[in-house]
Image (cartoon, rainbow over the protein chains, first blue to last red):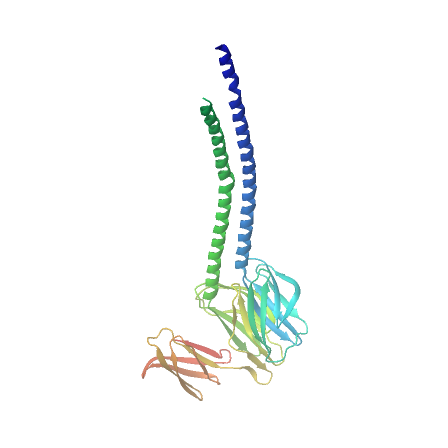
Length: 145
Length: 234
């Protein structure tokens, strides 16, 4: 009788160990999952916020070709950024693009771009396109005086 | 006994798993959703602001007038004036005289009278002048025509126009009659459709508007060198 009771008491150690192991596994797997999900969610949130900011900046761009002058043989184009974000622009006229590097125009800024030796004659109709790095376009029709 | 023991241990793990799950929800998923929601809100706010900006840009109603002066005290001068006929105040940021840009800062309140913003001394040699004003909302408003300075003849402009726009008179089809110095023209027009009369000479012109045979509106339009374009809004 005593022997049976002693055996019963000894058998009780296994469930305790199994409970400890099970808890340890749950804690380990859960911790890993927690850390992974936290970093993954942070990265996703940052990516999403960044893409939304980029999209907001793209739709916030506002600029015009304010003035164009042809002083033989150079064509000069003035661009006014009246939006609330800085922009980078290039000008394209009849397949020719200027300047080679993007021209930066800060918020409320105003710059000119010059096409040296641009071939044009009186009454030529030039379609001038200003485009930004973010992909917005503005067109201007100019009749050479 | 042993079955009860196992389910008891499973229970502990289930509670731990649930706690971890709840922890993940509160520390990772909800903050991410908040960030996403905030970014979306900011984007929508910006879209709304831009909509207002575009609307305001379209609503600007700035008119540019150029007065030519050629007196002994004030020889060969262009006086640039503006009038804000819109409902919003307008900030003028730049003035263009041909290809020369002149930065200015001028705020003109809505429904104000005609205000002088700049006086430009014209060089002595013959030349043509085209005036454009730029606002901070990105509108460029030009004076209606080129003004020509000739050393022998003085000031002149390329065109002299009486323009008529019917937007408030009752009816749809109208006859417009413009009479003045060596000028007598009539034309049919529709409501909201501007009609242009190239009157050639300076002077006073009588603009009469008829619906059928009945005269319903009359106005005197004065064309001068400083105001070569006159608008009749009826």
